[in-house]
Length: 201
Image (tube, rainbow, N blue to C red; front, side, top):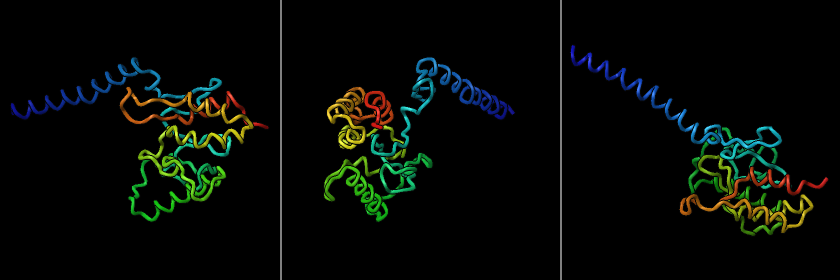
């Protein structure tokens, strides 16, 4: 009976510690230390939530920078309406020998070249034709952003140099100087683009 009683008390104790106290302290404490991140890193414009800096969203049409494709795409055409989907979130799990993966990548590359008026054999940034592991990566490489500058500038009727300079302002370095790679947040860049260079009528 003593062993059983001790086991029950241990169960109750650790259930309270791990199931109530720890989550409560972590939730309240981290919310106090990192309020913006705890609320989802929401991005506001004109007093309204327009997205999260941590989750990608679709931008279609030539006047915006496009994010990485999502594994939930309903269409293989980059930048096409309804082509970007965040549900289901996750990778496609297609391996390097997958015919489906090869077809998808070729379709994305073809669409990118056509949208940017490039030759059929022109190289394109890898992150604009391959989906990310999460499927909702909010960032692209600086090279992928620079690749789109001419198209965006032409669609908005503004100088290429103006759009290129804006891109460089949004290039984030490696985290803490050594983690990851330089990157550009597509949502933040497009919001700044709307403020700096409104699309031509």
